Amino acid sequence: MATKGIHKQEHTEKASWSAWLNRLGPLLGLVAIYAIFVIFGPEGFAGARNMETIARQTAVVGTAALGMTMVIIVGGIDLSVGSIIALSTVVIAISLAAGLNPLLSAVSGVMAGVICGLLNGFIITRLRVVPFIVTLGTLLGVRGIAKGLAHEQKVDAPMTWLNNLLAALPPDRRWMIVPAGVWIMLVLAVVVGIVLHFTRFGRHVFAIGSSEQTSRLSGIDVQRVKLLVYSISAGFAGLAGLMQFSRLTVGDPTAATGLELDTIAAVVIGGGSLSGGEGSVFGSLVGALIMSVIRSGCSQMGLPNWVQEIVTGGIIVIAVALDRLRHRRM
Image (cartoon, rainbow, N blue to C red; front, side, top):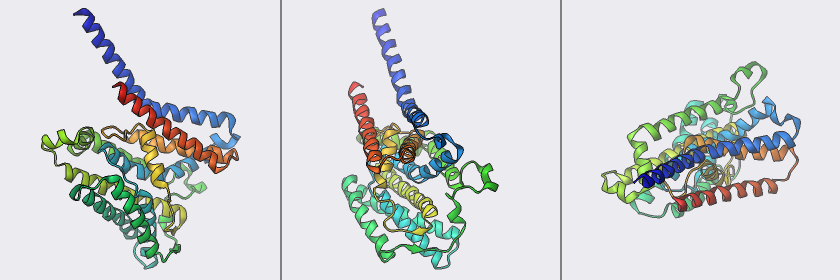
């Protein structure tokens, strides 16, 4: 009996260490990658100005990753995020050009994303089509709608306060540390974290990702939860489109091509499992930061884009491989 108790205690301690390592692993990776570029990169890499630039670059992917975190936890995938971001920039630019209030223009861009999410969720839940296929189709369809609305060209828009959301801070506003768009992302991250961990909806999201069949037998309305998750995720993609518009200052139907892969990578690097049931807002933001630090460091060291892509791709493969290895051991 004593031997069994010892083995049980050892198993519990190992599980505890594994859980902590899973949570802190992405953060340790970020610190290690940052330290490498500080040591071997240019002198200005660790400067406050470059930190602000990295934060601005992270805002778009980080905002989209908040919604993608929920999708991956519930056991799904959304490949249409990049196209929704592009559509959002076009809708915002067209609205501003038509004389609509900047706030209403921003809302219209976000709502365009929500509508796309409702479409994704409806086809996935009601028609029971695999999420990969559905969102692959809407990736192309939404991108086509964006190009059609923009007549296959960039849409110019008048300058408003929306353009300042991710603009570099002028000297008189350095007290903000980072632009307003970054603060918006952080506030939204706190809200999503609270929703996932302290509400019934959040518990249902984790439960469905862990076992959809068990959740259904437990009385959870699986279809309703999934529909909400895909709608919320697309809404965050619309917000990411607002951030992208702030950086570009125009509506660009070709913007954010491939950004859905960066968003998924941020969640996976941050500890999210493609099998569902696992993921965290903090980890997803850390994953987005890791990719921004890599891009910034490689650019400042004069390394070509293909090197950045190889490094980022390698990190994604390693993150997924470690996740699968951990699941096999469990």
